[in-house]
Each structure stands twice: as structure tokens, then as C-alpha cells.
Image (tube, rainbow, N blue to C red; front, side):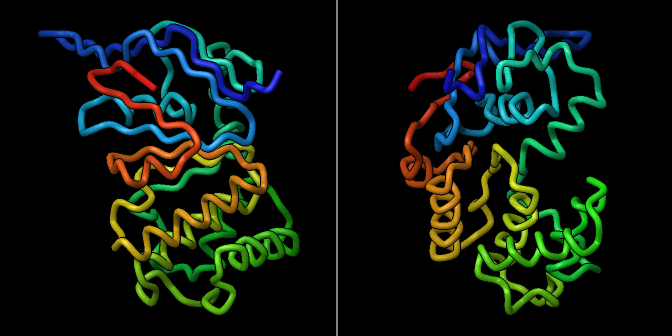
Length: 223
């Protein structure tokens, strides 16, 4: 079976004292290994909730999430943490780099948490920075890099451990069009190398660069 991610009748409801918010309503999605999928929706559409569930940062209220044929709903926090650290690489709109660390150290940091030895993690970090074209900027701190370069460091950090899935949340949102196109070129390259890419965006032009576009509005999806 080629399905890597399967969501079946997934719902997410947030309850408060006064009302309930149905953030996701009966979501059904199949994402194959090596597929490049964009999820597009405006603010409040449910795309952030969907991203959090796909990234094992949140759990559905009902329905089933299968990741590589394994039910995520039955996992404990330790198992979910393993997935977040080893199976999924995250790229965020705000880069989330540590200001006091240089590019190499920022990329190495998650590898330290994974228990990878110093020599190997340096090799992995250098290789991933080379992939994104920053081998000459490895000792630069974030404030010494442009927005596009900072996002490339963030991508290098996400791919250093060779995750099966890249989950990119508005990766071009804080960038000018030229820098945004450079980031999309890198994601396309990763896709061609076999990585599954899930891109969250509100930009139609960015969304169209993916193989498959999933539109979400009021917690419901359409293809």
C-alpha cells in the first residue's frame, strides 16, 4: 500500500462554557509516499488545526489518523514525540531559529535531542546546509542572514535527520517573492528526491506548485 497518511472521518471540536467550535468536520484525506500536497485556506478555515493533527501536535476529537498504517490515536506522548522528532520535519513561517546560535548550531540542535553523536550530527548538519546552498554561511547567526537565508537554515534543520515527511507551515509567508520562489525550488527538489511534502498556505500561487491541492474552508475540505 502506497498510503503514508490516511485521515478517515476526522473531526476536531473545541468546547468552551458558552459554545463549541467545529474546527474540522469529517475530514477524509489520503497522502501517498513521496507526494507533494498543498493545503490552502484563509485564516480560521481550519488549516492550522489540520496541520497540528497531521504533525501529531494535536489529536482528533473523533475519526482515525493512520500514519504508515499505524493508528496515531493509540499512541502515548512518548511515541508521538518520537514521530515529531524522527518522522516529521517541521518548517515554520517565523523560522524559529535560536538567535545566539549560528546556522550550523541551529541545524545541529534537534540532532542533539535525538542523541546523535557529535561527529555524525556535524556531518548531517553540514550536508543539509549544503543542500540548501548555505555552506558558506554556516557560522553566521540569524541576524546576519536575510529572511530567505534564515528560512533555508530552517529547512536544513528540518531535513538533517532525513524525515519521511516535511510539514511546511506558510514557509514563504514572511518572504519577498524572489526568496519565496527559492524556498519553493528547494521543496520541489526534496519532493523529487522522494520526500513527502505537505505545504500549508493561504497563497493560491504557492499552492498551485504542489501536485495536489486540498482546499479547506469552515473546517471542510474539497480537492
